[in-house]
Image 1: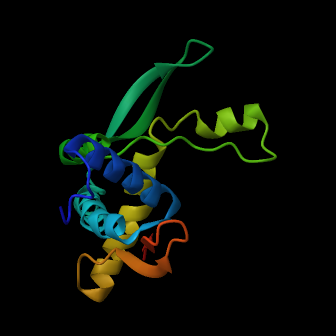
Image 2: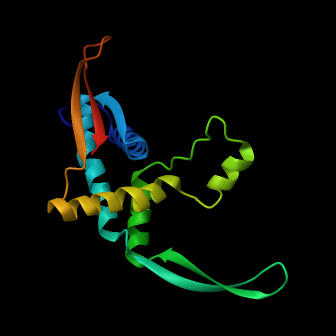
Image 3: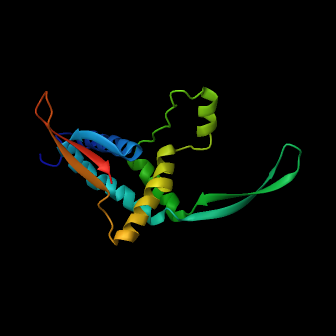
Length: 168
């Protein structure tokens, strides 16, 4: 059963979705070597798709009425057709993680900070990760190779080979 992690399809896909979401959110996770090797192509395909469309934005103008009843034109950015399609595809492949409240942050500050963002992981992928790797691909002249696996040795309980997978 090499390459299948000894799980059913639903279980294996749930494990990959969870680990990919955690890896993209935190940038580094510790897992078994076999799981890290299965996770690598899954995450790299996600990053590649996001890299190709992260600039596809459409600027729209809305007219809103303010508190005094005066109409005001407001410009905002929306996803273009390609970016929206990729965003929906990635949302099917990842779990949506929520922002974590900081230790000394008040509830009001946390709500103010997170009120505008509906899907924090998607925003992080399209606003931080994709531009970073697009710039890297342009500078190095190569695509792919967004992750690195470090072998750690064997786990103490069952001697399973452990590894750290991280975004480069």
